[in-house]
Length: 195
Image: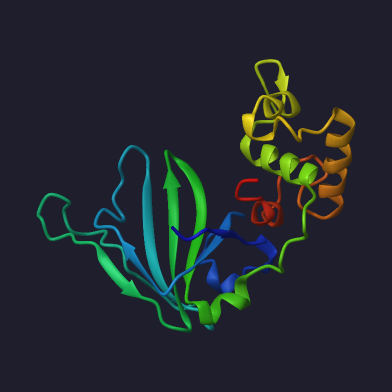
């Protein structure tokens, strides 16, 4: 599976947004992709629609089958080979929540959308960033530090509270967390796979 790269909202050109006014943008670099047969249909409050878009102009055409009945057997998965200069844009609603736009782009066009490479993280920064992405800020009387401390992957190298705060401050200064301590798109991209 290809990993999504989170995009800074202010870096996504207006002509590629297709009227979307939210702030959730991702890119997936692929040479081909499949649009599922049920694209465009609502199921349990969930739906994904797809458009083919010209990257230079933003001209778009819907490629989701929103018209044929799901029970008539004519719906099929669509396999699409991406070409330079074009992208497939997926707009997802998951259980009623807008998940934003995902751009499936050819490797030749990826550099225009992608953010700069992420900073190198020390082990404590990696733990704090992963915990910020994985846990709520507090739950059941525990803060994020307490919840992450119980994670078996980090027991041997887990930071003290002071080291945690130092790592968090460093992540904020690098732009990987915002001032409130929430992860930014740059931070999601820098999140370690597993350490």
